[in-house]
Length: 304
Image 1: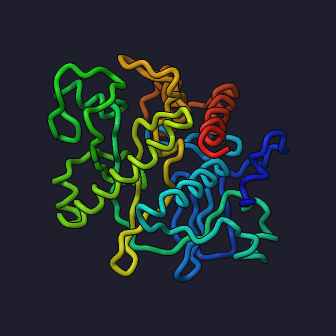
Image 2: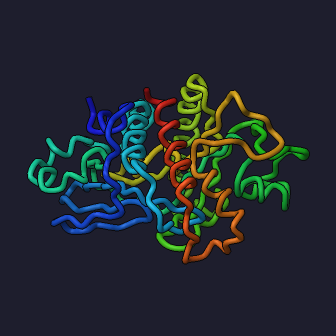
Image 3: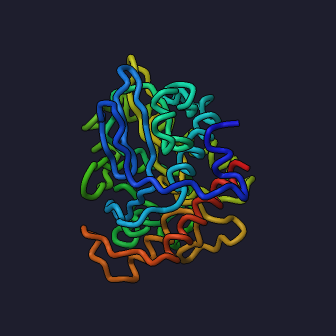
């Protein structure tokens, strides 16, 4: 049994909310959702219950979100190891760092010990369906990541084939979609082609599995690092924070889809008239609870 399974089991007590951590270790980096601590050639990655939308971190915490993200990432790292090497060493922090885990019970279920890599600062997005910023670009100019698409496609329609559509990775502010040529200018042509091929293979593998579990993966984003020259899958993978998950039995192209991801939160925020810049609007309790329920359902459908 992994560290997160008893915490997400039906009827289990609600785990405590974790907004941030302050451990007696060197802080390697602090992202929108995670803190990473330096362990030498390894990192301790701790996933909080923070949530961001439109690249702005909300004030409210989402119950058990960090545990769900850790559980799903660990699941997918295991399933996709045949496609590409990844950075995960263990989610059993109690075994890997017993003294730290004993002093900080908040780490349970939401932590991964991973290998340290040289991160590539590009979001490696794969889109199988026309949604989000991809749909917005297509409506404006008939393209996706600068490449033409057939005319007459509808919102949420399945693309003729999945597309690799990279973006810049911003620690603060907004990520920006870029073309494959722009990515090649940043990291090199050969590495771009390798990353694109692996990203598409990861998406195909995950999409086929998820469809059998009643979920359409409309799009997702991967992150990669280099370790001794090898390309390694890092960060999180195929979670509701990094993907659009749609219920297959309710799929109807031509408009937005119900989802098990952040789209519910984005839709609420759009309805408030917020300008998508800090500070964010407060989230009503029902929005917090409904978001948490969608994340848990994604886990249950995919893993249990």
